[in-house]
Amino acid sequence: MITGYVIGESLRAGAVFEPRGLRLRKVSRVEVDGVSEAQPPVWTLVEWESDGEDVGALADALAAALEPENGWYADFTAGDERVVVFAGKVFRHRRGDEAGRAEAVAYGRSVGTPGHQLDWEE
Image 1 (tube, one colour):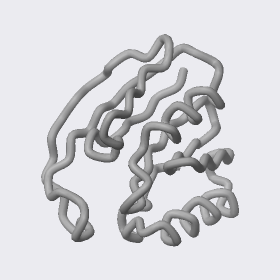
Image 2 (cartoon, rainbow, N blue to C red):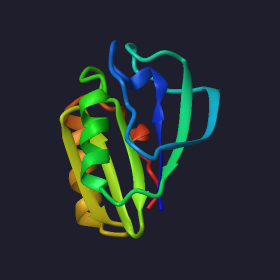
Image 3 (cartoon, rainbow, N blue to C red):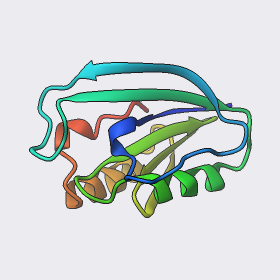
């Protein structure tokens, strides 16, 4: 099973994220502290799941849909793998792999993601 989330505000205008077999788990709105100047203070969290096995296609669909400005990212798990997706860039590593995580965090910082937002669970 693949499970993850995407922040509604992180999708670029006109983008569509609709991989085959995706199921909605929950949609919630949350106030967020410590946002960058370009990020809104309230986010829409869209949690989803899929029984699909094509992790690469799912990651590529997210990478194509995310806004390239402001360091937005989405992440998901597929078995023991963590997938972190930025606009046009995908990082995949086994959960608990500190080197793989560090590479994704470094990239996030380089594209403007506030450090405290690079907090996905392993």
